[in-house]
Amino acid sequence: MSTHWHLLCLDCQEETGHLNHGADQLLDIWRKKARAIAELVRCGGVDEMIICYGSELDPRFFAEHLDHQVVIRSEYGNMLRDCGQQFKCPTCDTLHDCRRKEGHEGEHSKVRDYDPSEELIPAT
Ligand SMILES: [Zn+2]
Ligand SMILES: [Zn+2]
Ligand SMILES: [Zn+2]
Image (cartoon, rainbow, N blue to C red; front, side, top):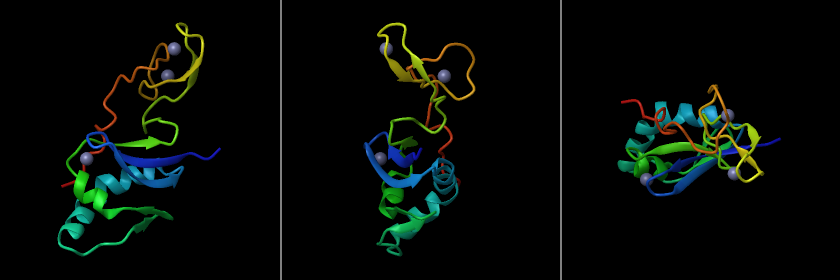
């Protein structure tokens, strides 16, 4: 099954990227290269889409949202470190994706119990 991932700014609700199975690559790009790409944009060095791992990324996203709360989210609304297991909700009796952190103990829940932007601090 394919799953496309995006970089999403929680503050502005804007996103870029469309990488199939590319969550870890996006994490890598954002943490290690976001500051450099933002710098390039600010001094006018990049004005076209950049290609990373075969997918287009808008370099302006890096400049505009560098110090905002950025997360990695899938087309299904899962965040990078969500447990993601489907479970049957005892309250409404339908299937939900678990939003607790991967590897959690105890029951699955649709309430996110961690900060999904905590890992996405760009390197200085
Ligand atoms: Zn933003
Ligand atoms: Zn429910
Ligand atoms: Zn879970």
